[in-house]
Image 1 (cartoon, rainbow, N blue to C red):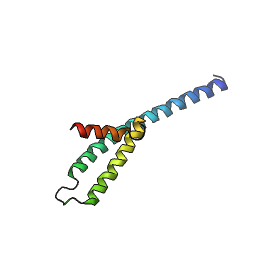
Image 2: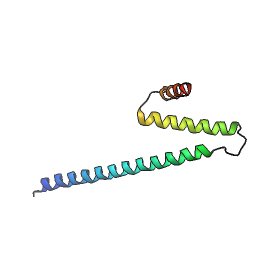
Image 3: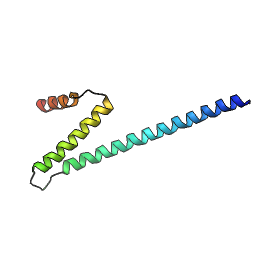
Length: 94
């Protein structure tokens, strides 16, 4: 194999390894997010149990809600207000 062909082949192999590493990192991240969301649901369910609920609790839940809305907007590509409007619709239908 001539020098140019060898270099091209090495580049192709590096790119393939890089893509495989990216896919593995992506899949691991998705698995971690699923685990974190499940655990977060358990934590939210238990949050405030056995306590007199006060504005500190409301503020903490509001902050967490804002972070989750931001994450939802980020991954879905929604414009500002879309997630909040959907949540409001869901509450009004309940």
